Image 1: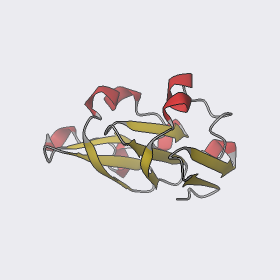
Image 2: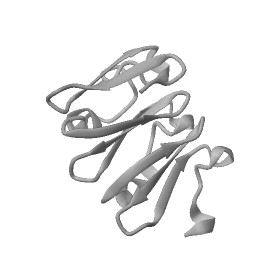
Image 3: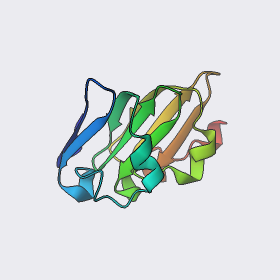
Image 4: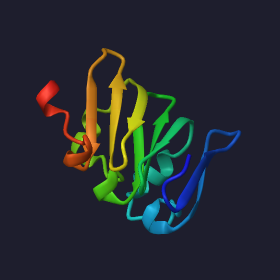
Length: 120
């Protein structure tokens, strides 16, 4: 997957490598993400991208995010809801996760779809 200025790829062992502009998610180790997120970037099944952030679905159904927080790189406000994630879609500045029960959880820029509270 790619943001406007970075790439992220899943390696054969399920870990993630990213490169490009750090402000766009291109440096997992240099990003302003928690050490927990870095450790959890293993057993990755799928990666999705906005213009400046990445979201990864892990094999346990949880989600790890990194990149610019304004573009969905910080899922902290919805972290507890991101369980049993089946799929993630993205707009230019927001992510939406579809959960196993069919519900949706969104984060990122509210003007770009990052607020799903009105449809819950």
